[in-house]
Length: 514
Image (cartoon, rainbow, N blue to C red; front, side, top):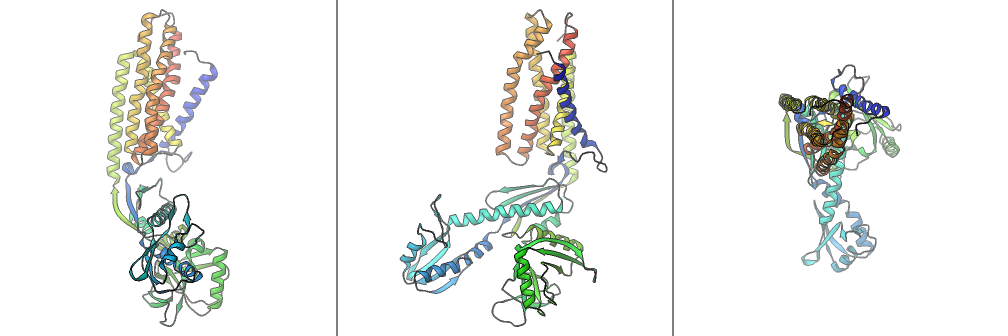
């Protein structure tokens, strides 16, 4: 156990130096980064914003139930079922029917049914049908259908929220699902929380619709950016789904901020056909039910690109472009909880954590030197190396350090000392019976190995479980603890053992005090 080949020594210290190099990166200036890797501070250490968002799936349910009108009427017509008094509600469809039982058989048929597909795995249907008094039929989403809509909207919302936040450039955001309808957003170091709230609060449903000159059926009265009330056709020429890209820009003639956009092939065809047929008319660009601008169509636009102009600042143009690039949210998002952690509180947390780490570290160093003399000094050197490697691995992973993470580092100090204490106490026992010092140290390291591995592996299993089933701060604690256990074993059984072997082999004929 005390014999090391030159190649083993080379690799031990090469690994240590490489990992230590990444640890040093945290202390370089931001102006001239050697390698752009460092440990990021979490929300509780550097301050920032905490937002809890909740999706409102009611508008989506209303939209989905309306999409069932045409398939339902087709099903009734194809099967020669006479219906009357057809009404479209927010969450259900109602009508009168001559033969309700026949529709019920068709509705829950196991054969292919485009209106209400049979889900073989779960024996569930998307829609439910209720037969009320006087042959009145009620069609609405089943519990399974509502759950499917909600889950799909939540997953899509999380992805779009992530895109919007990433586009702003926030470092190391945390975006997690919370329950059935909520999204947790943590933004460390955020300097402008109001802007993020504004971006996340907009659904960003974009569509292009022609302005009508008459107050006829099929139009909406909307207010333009300059306060003008316009009659806008309900027919959507093109939606934001056809946008490939959107970027803020300046109009060279008016020197006003604009948003230039690029369309996909289908969007370019729709836009080109509409602008060709509607020269001289006005085209309303509607965002979340409000007219952003309503320019006149002077000539056909067939290039697949265009420009949105309005009375907004460059920052507003930048945010609008960001919203269009990231896509529309499937449902509105409500901010149900908001917390802001100030940087001063984060600094106090860092100081408290570092102070406790330093105090504990000094007490451990003094105890080890008092208890084990020169070997206690070796254990302390291994402990310092252990912490350096731990920070180095966190830097390589670009991990986010939180207060629980600091607690994990402090616990690592205790685990590292525990490993060395077990080894040295075992060696003490062997020195009482063994005449050869080298043999006593060799057997001591060998016999203590099982105990040290058992203690650390069980803790590592606990750390893995915490990481798998925990979230947020719990995961931060589990990561630092898990990495700390690995670096502890490396420092105890490679670095400390090699330094110990140097002293023992040089004093093999003399006495060693332990």
